[in-house]
Length: 158
Figure 1 (cartoon, rainbow, N blue to C red):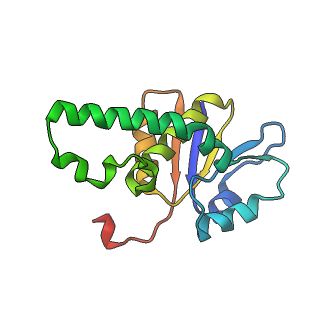
Figure 2 (figure 1 turned 90 degrees about the vertical axis):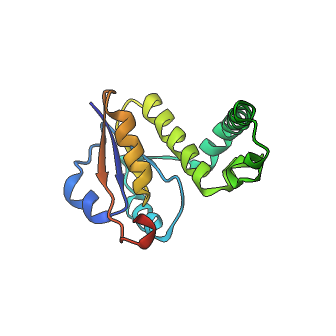
């Protein structure tokens, strides 16, 4: 069974991952942060790690996602006959400029990678919401989602 492992901790990788040059681990960082950079530095020189360039992946997927998203939002507006709808920030013609839509886009990128790759996928992220959504998505798939994210709690999470 394929795995999607989500982590932001070097300690988890050191103690729990079995490294194998026969089956390299594909790594993806949806959003660069100080913490994800530390994990990337730890993995940088490993021969059993293959990196997925997020700039290149985002560039490949962005146009179709934005077109589909704008069409979807237009249809929702038509169905609900609301002019107020267009004042909301998530209805922008540049949807990736909003945090919530960027997170949806990242989810679709990870799902696409999970479908395309033969082996396991390591997603280096601090985003617990992305992890929860991937766990829901993978329930009826032949994919196991492993949550190894440690986040400090904040008032935003309540």
